[in-house]
Length: 391
Image 1 (cartoon, rainbow, N blue to C red):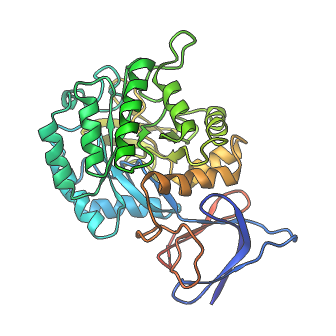
Image 2 (tube, one colour; image 1 turned 180 degrees about the vertical axis):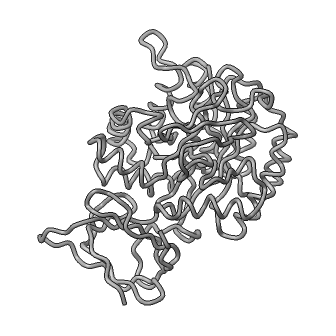
Image 3 (cartoon, helix red, strand yellow; image 1 turned 45 degrees about the horizontal axis):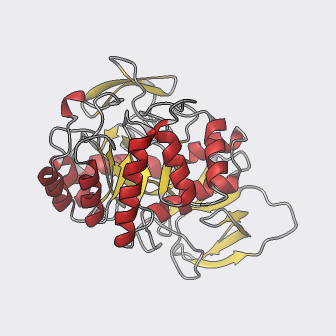
């Protein structure tokens, strides 16, 4: 038996205890009741990252080996991410990456796959390869989804590309969500695609209908005369139709903006915003030279940018660092941060809690996925499927 002490938050960030007791196999024996006495530190369910390109020197779009997948997964696991999607980038041929990632999904290392592109705007490629960007080809898309064997869970599309609505419907047919992003569109076009997708998803009993890829990044800024796609995506999230991704690393987005978005959406839709890392292979690594989708990346002072051009090229933080930075800045509460890092991503992917690395309830007898934090929100321990992780 082992006892972990700390303020116990559930997947939605609700305080439910002052500690937990685990048996020698890592299964839950008891949640200690909430107490009036002061309790130091925190215990939360394992964190879930739904937009992640790699870490620890390994890149999902660039290294097609199971060893590379494990390196990246373990790098994030050591900071409390017990479950994650693996993200690609715009590629001429994503099939080798898809085949490799499907194998990792089947082995229980990953929850699924996020295809980021290549059906995006050539004017908002960000750190993606412009040579790979193109309009949707539905036969091509079908071949990727078939190769994905049901593991493709989300795909980034620009709403203005040809056949965007048809591509979104095909994704939903295969159980995947369209994720609007890397776009140069207007608010009107974005609104139309949200409406089309929401209606089609409702016919299939799918909710939420879509996500927004790293909200604000790689899309037109909010303007007083043309609010643009960001405004439509936020409004849709408040209505419960969309879940918006926020790269909550204090680099991609200012913490105050993260807090504003969450506090606007939450009163109507508590699970409408998720924290993501958008991590690339340099996550958990020192400054230096790296790669993302075959493009050279330089990390300086923890910020990843394309070596040529200087565009931000993914994140270097991990989920626990997102929480630490947002809560530490006073942008959100710990309860909100946990909700955006566990319950909201689980809701987005329609997880049940039975998936490897996912704990949504504190159920006696179940092997747990947990993170423990000290009072300063440093990770002090991680447990995945009942087994302690070496930090």
